[in-house]
Image (cartoon, rainbow, N blue to C red; front, side, top):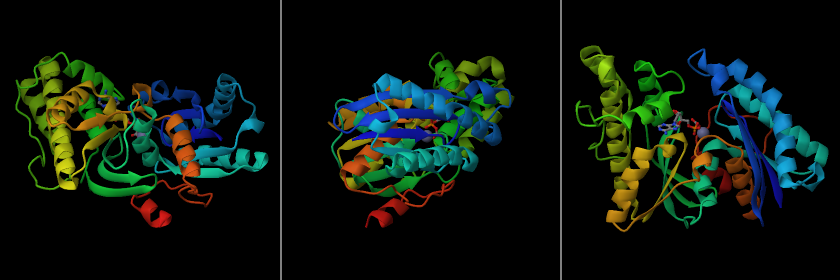
Length: 338
Ligand code: KG4
Ligand code: ZN
């Protein structure tokens, strides 16, 4: 079966074609980063309008790359939520209209399900069950994943998401938007232990996270130490985030007794985090899996893929209504599947 995937939840328009037999046939992403940069963050209305401009040309691009015509498609999978309401509506409207015209199903996909299944696109791929660390701009969660559609929340952030902390700290350091990748590059050139920064909730005994205090600690440090020490501050911040994320992953593996960890979402592209997790897992004969690097941040491939897995498992779209879900708890999926 050939599935067109449509991602438009935030500031990337992502399209892809996944074949349940042959694998990923094509994927293309248009990032709106340059457009939003001058405002210092995503402007929702501009995001929606840009998705409208990009979605049809990108569909043509991926179909051409895949050597397919519209009639060859068997289903359209689209991000139904969570995300920006207007942005989601563009993808949902397009996917539902196309599916109706082609008389094929439209499958609403949970954006985080797309992220957490994306490591299955890598080689080698993890077997179920596994612990998933979802670290994106909007979410920081640890999930237990027993199969497609079978997710249980183990813990999550009580305030900022890890990516949000990266972006806000980058802004404090004058690195612009979106700061995560720039902050990480700068951090790699600094001394991580020159300045002492807190490891919030590292020893809280549960699997919750908190990152807003760390951001405040960086602000205090910048006021005291000045921006001349930018690289060392960035390195200190990154080391603190990596310590907390790695510590909580190990705690989640211990608590569940599982031996496989999967890391997904934009912060999963962070090199220091990957190096640390690789080392910690290897030391304990545990295995860690990541999505291919270009599929860490938002993309249509993970949505097409999640759609393919749902179809193959005989599961419907996560929510059969043509309604986007700007706010959506992943735990609700288990209830729908049951
Ligand atoms: O998954 P994603 O593309 O979008 C959401 O669903 O949120 O994640 C984007 C987040 C942003 O906060 C971005 O700064 C962060 O991922 N990010 C990184 C890196 N690359 C992207 N954070 C740290 N290091 C990176 N290399
Ligand atoms: Zn995302």
